[in-house]
Image (cartoon, rainbow, N blue to C red; front, side):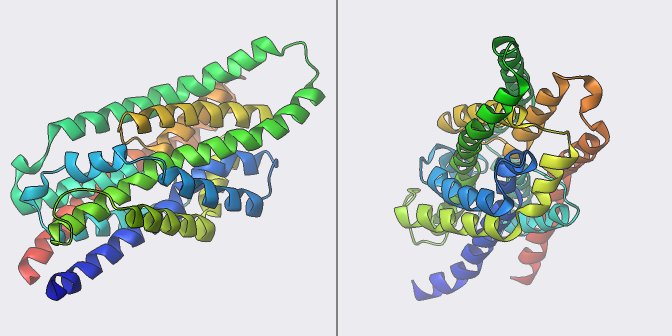
Length: 330
């Protein structure tokens, strides 16, 4: 047991680093709009995100079970596989964060895990049931995200078209605090769980846990680490999401956050690991498109989409190459 723990500790550390990068990178999406509309200051928004992301992480385990047991066959891989996947997530997360691009940690995780798994055990390691959920999540985040924000904004316009702009700004300036809180919670309920699944998988592979069961201390640890990541590095992504993509007023921020959060919560309860980055990005685009097509800075949107497209192959490749190196070294 002591030898197993010694070999396992570096892997667990890498998983927590990846969770930190997740908070550093993706969790900022939850509060980008509330900062851009100046309803909350960056420091106030970060405090809210840290707390509610942590609470959301502790709200369930369905997504964690999908990541831990549904992407690759646990019995066919080892802790080196998990370590290689985490290096892929961390590397890609730091690179895209450096350029202020909101890429998907979800897609980074599943593709890096797939690449490392293939290097370990070949094509049979992949589980279609889990990948079907990943593909469903891709559809959720792209289409439901866009139409969630779009339809929410249209409904508000049609309901409140006689209300004065000043009153709308005042009311939604308050309501947006609630929608941002909902978005932060929903992010934790989906993204925060993914690394809980990876952490528990490593404990099973390392012989610490006899079966795949997520202990409460794993939930709390991952929640706190993600919260710390949000507090340390959130501003760079917030700037891209909340200020560069389109100009937002409180009512539009409310619509984008509410539409995205409802989509994410639905996916979380179904155990579907989706990209919160995709969801809030497309929701913001949907809200912007209700004014006029040119209201969205599609050039910035193109940069974001490019990062999305490259996430799958790049993280797969990093995970695969890293695992091949580990096999030769160890």
